[in-house]
Length: 344
Image 1 (cartoon, rainbow, N blue to C red):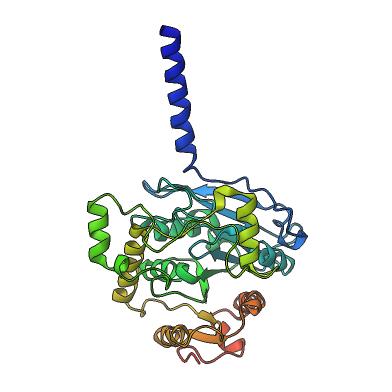
Image 2: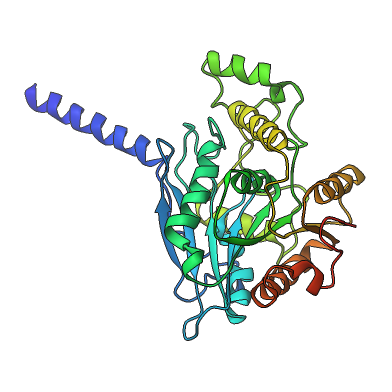
């Protein structure tokens, strides 16, 4: 009887460990067999973890030229549902151009530790940890003051995280690139859960970590299927081969926290953002999104807006970073883009 009881306690302990591991960071991704060498991690790519406060650890990665001093550095911030592995094709090309590449997954996303019980539910209680994690990575790990200039590249919903970090002070960043910036909640989410009142009620009821109504879990075959070679195709391949990287729709709490982040960004204003910012916008995006990109760029003190197809963005990012490295404080003008403060 005692032996049976001890065995039962061991089983329960192992089960508890298994549940805890489901939220642990993931730094051992397997290369999908469907992807060619261009999508593989750069030679010497290394993973690391950084943690701020009580938030789960964030995963970051880094790759650098093997036999020469980097000319500049790029820090990629994937948007919601994105992951650092998507950066590999761009990272390989940039490293060939003597650009050291970093990538930081958001809190509760990509290979970072999770907060919600279901691993594919994106959840944060607040984006303050994302902002603090970004600032800490720059200040304590990258330390650009001691090396080549650093340009941060934020995609989609990561744009307000970067903007908020800049508003609070992120010393060492030489410039920023915003690709398809999202300064509004994801359009596919239902209206009701976006409201601050609904988010507060959900938290009070203990439901804020559940997936928002109308959102779905990770799907193996999106509709329509992404084209081979596209970022969406690469993301699907990495998530198919590595279940720990899969992400479905956000939680009620994530939507509420994102609203709070947007409110904080707007309330702080743009005067403190003195560094050059390049906004890359998709000309095929809905008119409302293109108008929002133009308004944002006009509001920023030193900004240029370029309407380009997303498949051209990596080339534009690399060119901009090289210009920052060579041009000092005036990369927008020397790149042939509009005068700072006058986005087109």
